[in-house]
Image (spheres, helix red, strand yellow):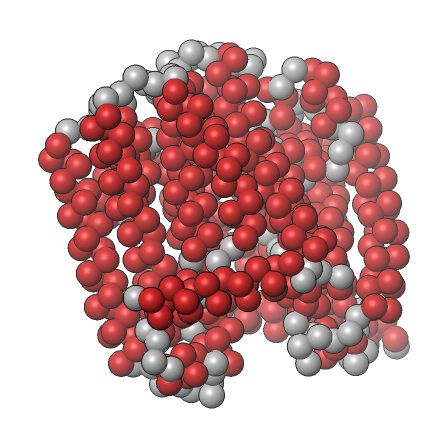
Length: 259
Length: 271
């Protein structure tokens, strides 16, 4: 465990140096991320200046869904950014070196590129989320469950990234797969209730966007039953288990053709 | 003689790019699925908004859903482009291969974009039919030949505008190779919020809309969509077209300057 922590710190330090080597790009990305976040919030505020609710939800409730999505999505991008570079490692044959080292190759390719840019925007997101939580009424057990289901969400996000890595090993296709996931993830920006059936059920339990983003927020609003909470956690654990198995399956079929 | 050679050269690029789309079928299908997903998200958001409201910022449910559905088609035709890969080519030194060849790098990407757009259009037909059958949104078929002519012209202008704006963003890779996508990311944010991807821009107060309309971004989707819907009178259309042409000319000049400076500073890093 200590070995992995030291390795992660080293890889993170390298990643910071790479990002900081291009200061203009760093500033532009940070500005873009902040601008997008502010424009999203601005859009919601503007929308609610003309309407009282969207679906069955008030402004604060919609903000809770949006900020839960932004918060958890940003943590996922922050930690798993290296996946976006996996294709070049496969195509160039560099992945072979990962297999030769006494480190789990998933660890190297999942956590190897901590994103400083997402870390910088995180305080603003957390402040907005806390401000929104202050405007809602909930019990402490609901907050504990919210945090537990948020961890469950991060477990699913990590598992999906492992799935993308596995596709990369099998098909050398990563870029569109990860962006496809990001677009599906975006559907969780608002509660999945806004989507019609059967899309709603598919998004909740098959693609799991609902389990990832809507269920945690609904716990705080007391809008979700215990069976759904338990199913959500089981879905998270099963996703983790099966993506690990799929990774092993993909590795067994790795041909190292590019090296 | 020279023009035959010119046409033949880029026609080959067009054919190669077209074939590429069929070779990487999984890639292409994912890209098309992504386009549909973006529209679905916006579509259902607006449907939810109109669940409990009949009129929002002057828009009725039918009007806004027509707009959202129309942007599905326009997004693929106008905003879909492969030339964003140019940023990566500049960043990792692959640009060197093109600099040694007797072709114009920008025309090369423009031709590749055209091939990609035609491929997209073929798929849009099926997607539109499929989504129409599933969602059954209000659909407005424009039959006025003058408006259709205006629409064709403004879509062509918007394609050129998007191309030069995108290339300006890509060329910043000359100076920020470690963060090649930074400017593209910023451009995509502007497209989403000021281009009319998420909402029609006239939902804002008039003064705000007027200021936004001076920027190039509303002419990518919002203005062409309004032209199709017949909401733009001829004088307004001409003034809008004038603004687009001005932006294209100004940005093309900037693009040329940027390219000249960029190639001068280019170090073929990574090669």
